[in-house]
Image 1: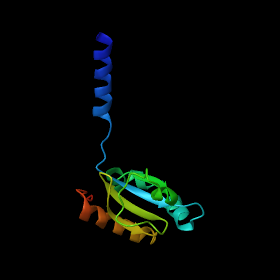
Image 2: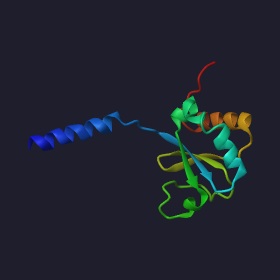
Image 3: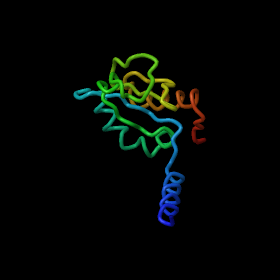
Image 4: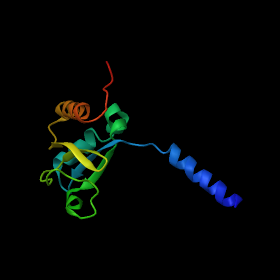
Length: 125
């Protein structure tokens, strides 16, 4: 009985200390996509360190996986282009950026999308 109580307490501690993400950014990509490679090379290392990346962590998904029954995001429409960045909350698509419009446009579009669709508050600077 003592073991079970201790085990339950350990599991509860782990569950309480795990970060809870209300939103995530799903990057839909495919092999050979030059724009995907450019985004991953230029912004991939930076993204998790930004306020946006901490608020909506990135998950990379192959475009073929979005067509499978077990894909866990309810999309508003099929994804046809890569990269496509899908803002997701509770398994539902909130908004998307189709293509990679370059670094400056990407950050502006992402920031606006987060502000419009979530509780994200940009850093004042």
